Amino acid sequence: MTRSEIARDPLRVARFLLGCELVSISSEGVVRVRLVEVEAYRGADDPASHCYRGRTERNAVMFGPAGHLYVYFVYGMHFCLNVVCLAEGVPAAVLLRAGEVLEGEELARRRRPAVRKDTALASGPARLAGVLGITREWDGTDLLRTDSRIRLLRGAPVEDGDVRSGPRVGVSTATELPWRSWVHGSRAVSSYRRGGRRTVSNRG
Image 1 (tube, rainbow, N blue to C red):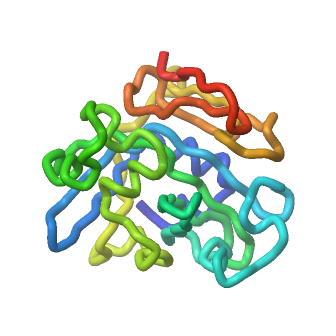
Image 2 (image 1 turned 180 degrees about the horizontal axis):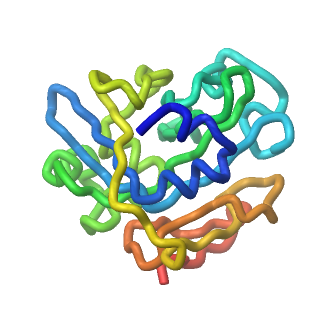
């Protein structure tokens, strides 16, 4: 995978990332997941983006360079993972919402002991970060370096007919934009929550 493939519009990168793999390496072991659900976020023209109101200490990584990991803390309890894209200095990222665990299931279960089904181990951004062992200290990690403790790798391509798109989850603005993409039929895809209200399945 090259940096130029990531330094593009987040909508294109989001589609590209479906089927790609994340490998996390730590003293505890290795966990590898296949990405099956993502969301695109732009900067100044996207009111749901962390960068909509400009650069801060918190969102600085989102301004590039592309291919780095942007980690943020939400609801006072969860970490979320994003792949930075576009040119350096232009903020954009793709939120990684869900994945299928391909390697390291035992370690993933230890990290997420409350999750009952293996298919749900990395279903949702907080669970995905949890099974990979990601915390805020990983913010800014270069996902494309071969010596990084977390790496983004090519996976089996996902056919266009197996991809679905819809509104992003839980955002309070730009709710109509279909900037979330997922692999149709994957049981790891998270449930859709519109504005914090009702929940419906989008796995089918």
